[in-house]
Length: 319
Image 1 (cartoon, rainbow, N blue to C red):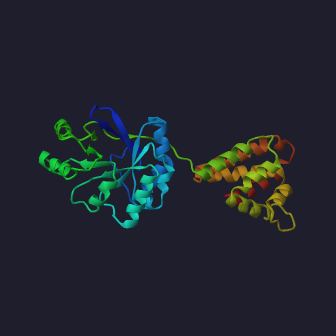
Image 2: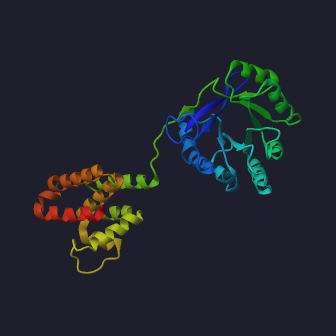
Image 3: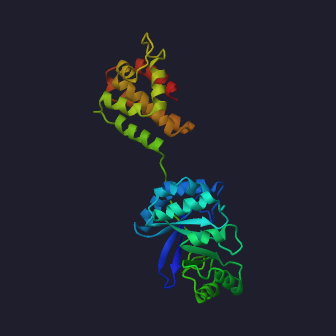
């Protein structure tokens, strides 16, 4: 993510625009799916921005047609977020109705890239609280004509893409309320690392498996929340390595049959292998398990040869 401030006439920060970035260092957004980019900002970008900018600063977020129609934007707080819709969005009856509904719920809208001849511009303006006008490449007369087309509208105007002192002074003279552009500040990256819910669950399982006092029932309960790992455990238990004589279909029975130590070792191997699937990661997980088997408390109680054989089979099954 990246942020770029929007300034008031007194040069106070009015809000920060949250900008999607495919990777760190991008100077502009490279977006293949506008709505997916917005979903990424909703899921992670807003919380990341709140950590860096504070809990009170307003932010503007670009939203697409599907984001509005699905009402996914309602995951964001209406008192802190301005929803920025593109001026060329399809002004269908359903879309306009969804905007009215969200306005009724307290959300405010900012119309981006407004021009008098933009498709849907006339329909969106009455529903917008703010309108953005891109002034790059335009002379003063053209900007004045755009502003004049909004006479009678009671919202606030934002001059964006300001790149010089002359452009800023001109827009201020014309009566714009807010200002944004490279002249004031380039977008600044907000860098964070996202851990998926899948990875989080696996990391929690690793923490439990490292607890020497963990009970069998608790390990089983944790494994049971991971469907893929549960199926793999049943495959492991029903393999010839365990020589159980009959098919096992219950996760609880499987855990009892193999015992806590074997269950923990297998699960540790499987999780470590999944967290890092490269050759280096597989080798590291094997070495980590090898050390736990031969040098841990359980390793002193069983024959090394037998344990090495069982480990080798379980490692292959886990991978």
